[in-house]
Length: 148
Image (cartoon, rainbow, N blue to C red; front, side, top):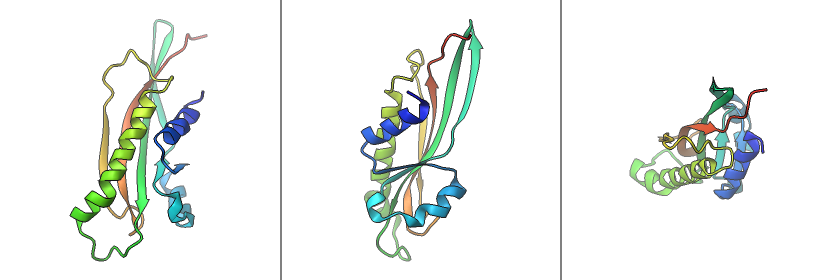
């Protein structure tokens, strides 16, 4: 499987309705075309790859960065952070963690790496007054193959 296929599978396994592989400018230009049925939505920016060569093998780290977003139906002019946290941010945080767990449990993950750190941060009115959720980051170690 390719890296993108594994990420699509992890998104599906986490039961997230949508996945966009796009940078923020691209996502910003088309997110208004989504219906409410297409949320929650996982926006994954094109990833960077870092790595090293050791004993004729390469070790790669995929730097994942994305946003798990939902769209509010009600007016956000008078929103309260406590209500938004419980109703919108916490469920997106849970979905982001679920997605990352499925990524880590994929067949591409380097099992020699035991400690994989991640971060999940709240996002209030992200790119639009009606988009709320979380951003996430994780350095995902993937298996290296013999160098040829």
